[in-house]
Length: 395
Ligand code: NI
Image (cartoon, rainbow, N blue to C red; front, side, top):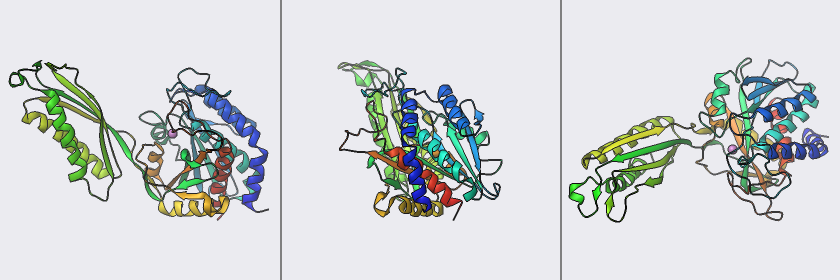
C-alpha cells in the first residue's frame, strides 16, 4: 500500500475515537487563555501515546515527534484550542456544557485533527527524516494572540523550526474538499476608536453649538479616501465604521459622538502609513469645524502570507491525497488569524478544511451560535495533515 492509502486506512480505523475526542472538546469549551481543562485533556491524550506535552505558556505547549536523523530538518504543525464567548444554540447531545462559551470557530476540530495526525505519524517514525513539532496553541481569538506569545517563548526554536503548516475549518467548502491559496491570504486587522467632542445644545440653534454628528459624518466620508485615494490599487484594503453613537434627540445636538471601525490590509509598510493617515484625517476634519477629536488605532494581527514554494508543494500533495477535484483555490479572506505571526517568521502554509454537507444540515458561518460540522471532515483533517508533514520530510 502507498503512503496515502495507509494513512486513510488508519484514519478510518481511528474515526470513532476522533469523533469522541471532538465531541468531548466541543462540549467542554474554554475561553482564550483559560484553556486549563482543554490542555489537561490534550496532555492526557498525548501521554497515552507516549509523549509529554512541553508547556511553554500557561495553557499552551508542544511535542516533538522525532524520526530518523531528528536534527536534519524540523517542521511544525499547529492546532489552536480556544473557544468563543457565544451561547450555543444547537440541540446536539455534544453541545457546550459551559454556559456562554462555545467552539463556534471549529478549534475543537483543529485540536482533534492534530491529535489524530500525531497518532498516525507516531506509527511511521522510522519512515521520515527530521522532527515534526506539534503545537497546541491557546488564545487565537483574543489579542495579543497566543501565537505571538508562544513565538516569544521559543516555540519555533531549539531546534529551529524551518516551516509550519496549519488548517482551519471553512463553512463555504463541502466536506471532502480543502482550499489553498498561495501568497497573501488573510489580512491584518486593526481596530479604530474615534471620539468627536463638540458643543451640545438645542437643535434649533446649530450656530451656537459645535455639532459633532455633522463632523462625525464628514469624518466617515473622509476616511474612505484613505482606502480609495491613498492605498496602492495592488494592495487590497478595507476600512469600515461599524458603530456610531451620537445619543442626541430630534431637537438636541449631543456634545460628543463616538465611533468604532476596522482597518484591514495586506502590507506592513502601508498599514503603518494608513494608521497615520486615519489619525490625521480624523483630527484635521474635526479641527476645521472647531471640534476636538480623540483617535486610537489598536493594532491586531498582522497579515497572513502563505509561502509560495511551500504552498505549491502542499497543493500538489493535497491533490495526491484527495484527488485533483477536491482541492480548491481560495479567494483573499480579509479576516484576521494569529497564524499570521508564524507566517511572518518562517515559510508557512495555512489551508482550509471543508466541513459543509447540505444534505445533512444547514451550514451556518463561523462565530454563529448554530455552527456545526460534518464530522467526516475529521478524517480529512487528520489524514491530510499527517500526509503533508510526512511528504515534506520524505520528499
Ligand atoms: Ni478560528
